[in-house]
Length: 244
Ligand code: MN
Image (spheres, rainbow, N blue to C red):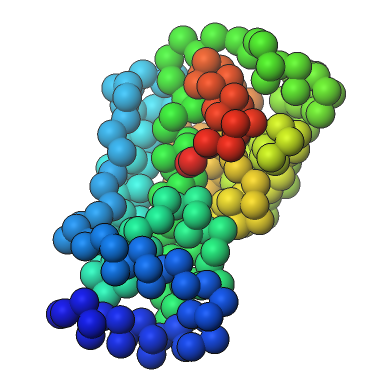
């Protein structure tokens, strides 16, 4: 399909009003020829068994290689006819969902959110994760009442999430932290914040090992948290450079 006919499709899909309000998709599309499969599954940086016994290898393998891979496959399908969704970063797209053509908006919300959430999730876990220190610990003390209250409140929020979703520590542009739930695969970038860290409370994240014992999973999960990465993410958030 020619670039021009893609533009005509976009015009038809988004309507002139949306183009006037937010022309960035069109310019980005014209400037960057899209790859056939622009979205790729980020590899785990540790073995699938590295988080045992807290998260078992089979859960990690299915979660990463099948669940996250499904979001990638769906995004590549959307990108075939809507290359603009690959022309910006995931957090930029999630922050401007109203500009995404309505026909694919819910699909992009779910699958780009899933891609962003899981990309964050793999990053902020790992073996030998250390302890919080430096600026992020200062912020936890200041905004979340210290580590003991933070972990208690975070686990309570994860336990309260009805149905599928996430519990996040969000960070705003000033560096302020907050514990916030999101349903399904929604991501804090949808309202201008970033996920500093978060735990997946969809049943697929824990059911093989913990069945209905979500509270036990939430408690054990802290043993997998990589505080070095979270400290780096906090510095990036304050600098305005944190992506997923
Ligand atoms: Mn998941």
